[in-house]
Image 1 (cartoon, rainbow, N blue to C red):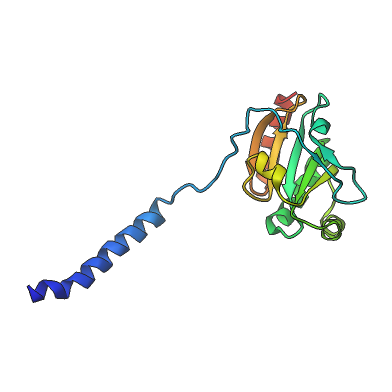
Image 2: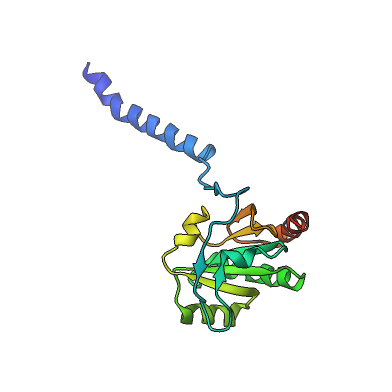
Length: 175
């Protein structure tokens, strides 16, 4: 009986090792997709985040033209990484509106001066209430909005160079 007790710690360690290895080999999907995709934008009205751009409300997203709605923050490193792609999309004629999440006007202005400003409007969502209504779980996230105000697609994370053609195609299809 005592001999088996000597092997018990090794057996427990083996079970622990198998559980960790299984978690590494088959990781759980932690991406939280918005339940708002395929639905109309929630009604909101945000104050201007910076003086250089007007405020943003849900009515600004219903003008007959598809557009991108980008949720970002000055303190977000992936937001810096996606800045060149957003500028590329703007140069391609895409209208990009933004929600600045949990940020200050000075920090947003510094971010835009340093990394570029592709946005036509920027609303300040100091409490992330609109971000949560959209079903967004973090920054950056970008939504494709059709001309009627329906959320067509959610892009989770930073926009990379290889994502630009897909977003352009989705915007064309959303007309």
